[in-house]
Amino acid sequence: MARYKHIDTSPRFLAVDLQQQLLPGTFEHALNHLLDNALDLTGFDTRFNNDLTGAAAYPPAMLLKIVLFAYSQGIVSSRAIERACREHITFIALSGDTCPHFTTLANFVGTLGDDIARVFSQVLYICDRRGLIGREMFAIDGVKLPSNASKARSGTRADFERQADKLEAAARIMLERHREEDHRAVEPDLRAKELQRVERLQQESAQMRKWLTAHSEERKGSKGAIRKSNRTDNESAKMATSKGVIQGYTGVAAVDAKHQIIVEAQAHGTGSEQELLIPVVKAMEESLADDTLITADAGYHSEANLKELAAMEINALIADNNMRSRDERFAGQGKYKSLPDPIHDKGGKPKQAARYQPHDFDYDPAAKTCICPAGKALYGNGSDCTINGYAAVKFQGAQRDCVPCMQRDRCLLKPDKTKVRQVAFFQGKAGHESYTDQMKRRIDSPEGRARYGQRFATVEPVFGNLRHNKRLNRFTLRGRKKVDAQWKLYCLVHNIEKLAHHGYALKVGNPLSCKLDVELSPQ
Image 1 (cartoon, rainbow, N blue to C red):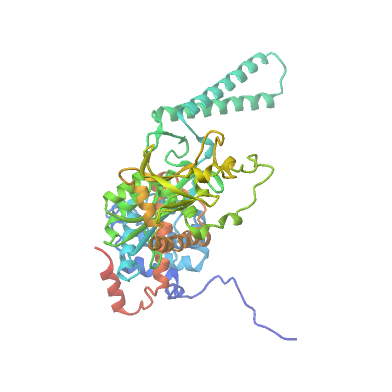
Image 2: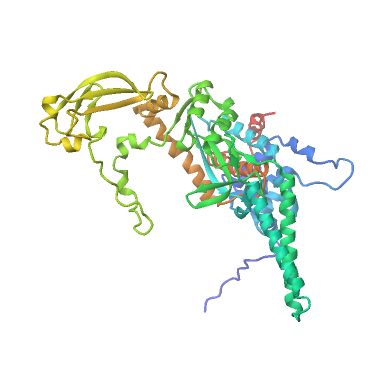
């Protein structure tokens, strides 16, 4: 019978070089080299006041290494990161065989704030110096994610006051009933449970009254409308997504088209994407070249945004809701949509128009001709008309064609009284052309369609990497500043991955390579 050597897969003591566990070409190798040699982390020194007294602190570079590597593996919990530092060889190598307590890790992530923004800009600088940023096109998009906030605790001040009144009334009724039953024989356990329920109701009501006192004003949106507050995280927002209504934040990213480097990352507690376009563009204004194109989908489209971009002299292509309906390439997109549910769809079949509409006429704006559904030519009776503030071109049929026509019932509203049909084709608002109309003309041009078509392939793979590969399905912190830092951490992971894939820090033993990396970091 064959004999084999015993393979111990759980050895307790191993003589290994931790540095050799970080293989060149991997994310963790690039991360370790970047934080040790290329970044200036002296801004973290202000966190500590232990130069003369107190215990030594964990180096911020080491904490950043294990946090960023944990995020790259889909590990967000500080307890899970602490456990990985004890059991996982890559975490042991990055942490130098130390094991920070989970409270240390949680406090470090929760207080990153502006420090992580400086780290993000330095990594972006290195990506730029290595030729990973083309500046030809930046695509802006966002993802809505739930946060560490309860959706059930959302509402206006009037909602909270009404809830507090109900809780107090319920507690009052229970107390009155309890007093009436004092002379009766009631089991002690039932009486104790009733008292606990009364105490819980009173405590919830007191907490709600305290919150109302601390937040004396309604939360309002950018246009002055009242926005629902949240008693667990008042900076988060209730927003509608394809998965339903969530309580969370919108993570916005601006991505370069050359190698999909994230050049700007922000998290906001609002579901309105229109409010986020201008802040993101202003934040990345220094990264724009003279010919840089900004692209965004229809969620960021508004007349005010287009006007602001024009004032800033920003070259942009922002889609509107009807862009695809004007594109002949999407003429057959309806057949790919699912059929309406006969149980839930109460609208019935769409009714056919009782008479011919302008789109039933064959209008040629170049030749300025119009053919009716019966095949007769109409003559123009107004090439420069204004109807309700909109410029229009009007046509009218001849009596010799309209009077004997067999389709008068479908063409005229009152065929017994009206002799001829008139039809108007609108050309937009009269006078000054709106910024929306200008954008429509640009994005509908062959060049505009070709350049805007690159947006989807630029930004969507980035969100696919973060959400699927890195398992980013929610923000675990509360408060916009903390959530913004966590969103930047994930975007940092994406950018450092790009550096690793393009050969960053492969020659760590070469002193010239290390010197180059140090020179590239901003001082």
